[in-house]
Amino acid sequence: MSSVPVLLIVMGTSGSGKSTVGSALAHSLHCPFVDGDDLHPATNVAKMSAGQPLNDTDREPWLRTIRETGRTLALTQTQPETAPVKKLAEVYETSQQTRTWTDEAVDPTAHVSDQPTKGAKVAVIACSALKLVYRRLLRGSIQALDDPDATAEEHVQYKDLRTVHVYLDLSRELLEHRMAARKGHFMKLDMLYSQLDTLQKPTPQEPDVIIVDVQPDTTTDAIIAQAVAQLRSQAII
Image (cartoon, rainbow, N blue to C red; front, side, top):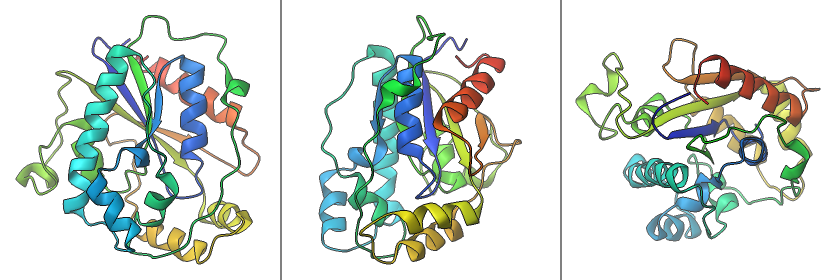
């Protein structure tokens, strides 16, 4: 088990189920969960509300907040109160301007682990983390998105936090099916395609990444089981 606080970031594009899985994973591990989109600063919310897409200058302080919030939650094991801006933020994750939809309610109590992580300092945050440079900033291996070391070989040091990305790997066809099934959303597939164009998929060679294969018949319980098994096999939790 990691000797420093652990932040698990459940990542993926729209339609991957990162918020559902993140909430269920946190409940399984008996630790705090927050949706990263709810951590956007007021300036980002105002910009998105005005129909303006975010750029990396906007995202950098938000990514820093996610890392800092994750460390605080892992240490304190308290559930934060956040203003729900997820749907608005998801729409403007890329340059696409779309309308939002209503997600189905999720009951995280349906995914309780029989083996809670006792005594571990863990928190879970859902965040798309589409680009490698975003994940490097979240891991703390670079200090800024324009850091000269952003393209160099990555060396992660666990000083005050270990950030592990749990990537939900779905096929393009499955993502299209899920997005098409969502109600009341205009141009939803265009948003997905834009995110897929932006996505730099994690690979097994990237440090501190757990890749979970999601098929059409994979249940949330099975996803949690896959993730927890990999996290425990690597002594992360």
